[in-house]
Image (cartoon, rainbow, N blue to C red; front, side, top):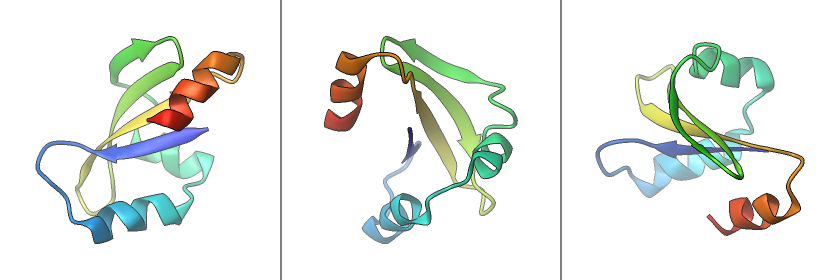
Length: 78
């Protein structure tokens, strides 16, 4: 599972809704993160990567580790 959050300045609810509803493909996530190049943080439930959408919006992309049931609960709670 993947979660995308906008970085930096406050964003409109419309932009956040668009990101959630888009349903990015794996290929799009690879492109957004430049092949998962820059790790922002590492945690028990997964890593967070820096990314940039086509419109220039900077985002954090969290990739959930599939092997952790507790991590899944924590990820869903975010």
